[in-house]
Length: 248
Ligand SMILES: O=P(O)(O)OC[C@H]1O[C@@H](O)[C@H](O)[C@@H](O)[C@@H]1O
Image (cartoon, rainbow, N blue to C red; front, side):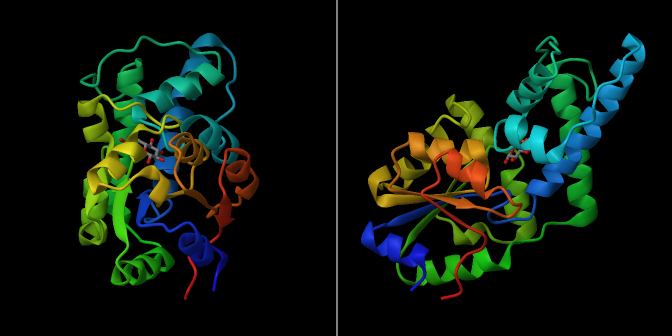
């Protein structure tokens, strides 16, 4: 029996709460690409105006540390702060590309949706096959995502029915849930399933996501290491880190 399966059994886990981008669908890299496109052009433009050079966004470092797994406008603000840049908040209704937190976030979203249309959504087959087996054995399931595009991504991948509940970026905003690393989104999913965090396992590929799972008191926090970040996931609280879901 795999270590993961053994832990689920030992801890008497009744529900699985999975993050979407990077755990179920191969969209973490699509988000990262859209962020890079938006920030690189903004930094270049800003640098030209100020007569200085800003380093482009590095996906391995900047994206992981400041943007991955958190709500859209938090990502804009966090990354800019890391570069010593402060912009007005603006609003979520700002035009794409306005020099505000809202405007830059909306431009990234435009790029993300373009990429989604061009490339479609690929799932991680190991996740889907494993989840289907778990469901056959009576495991409860929910999907969470900081993304406001969650439902579109689930729909494009044709996997909505794998999950009893979903909590996404749109609902989080409506309910006033705090973004990761706060545990709110995972706790809301557990609440909707009617399962205590002590009986549920969280699956996350983002550093701030495993931190959120840990903060929520979940029985098991599994780091999913798709992009060589096992150390980062462990350091932020993952109980175990796996590269892919077990076959049996
Ligand atoms: O801008 P959206 O689609 O609402 O997504 C917010 C965040 O959602 C997360 O799932 C992604 O890891 C981030 O890259 C993304 O920024």
